[in-house]
Image (cartoon, rainbow, N blue to C red; front, side, top):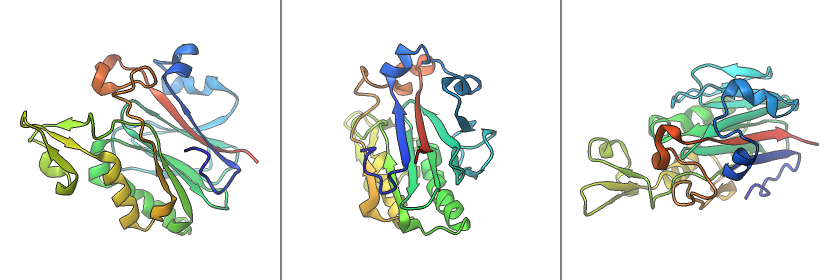
Length: 221
């Protein structure tokens, strides 16, 4: 799915469980991320917020869950372990970014804030390719009735045990489409981070001891 980008100079990488374990990075903290290479990283200190930021200066951004840049020297990155890594790449210009979308940020409007940021920089939303990477899928994302009312009813599937299954990826797809992105340019990975324990870390599966995957997007002419 990461090859489906019109702008061939924008590259997306997803460092999954095997890479992180092999390189002993499963407990990676942001302060160590700069040691991966000599790249200039733009890093959000994720808080499950709706905050997205544009910057042409590398570094860490507090209380933020999405970062964008038009500086070709910068690598935008996030950490995930069930939440959706959502990558944005302009079709022809140097403008790209990545958003960390957990269920809280998703239903509170992080994708709307993303569209506002992009349009605020003067770009048209239908000129972007969007990739939703490996994350927990509708087969495994279960919630209780204390929060079910916060989700759109059409994405809720009741279970016999009184709980509910939610399709986060479809919620994200509909949000992106409704905000003005081209639905034909949105690609969604079917890989479930919870099911595929050999490939991915999962917070829901392993709790606070879970490792993290890294999503990266950069410019490579």
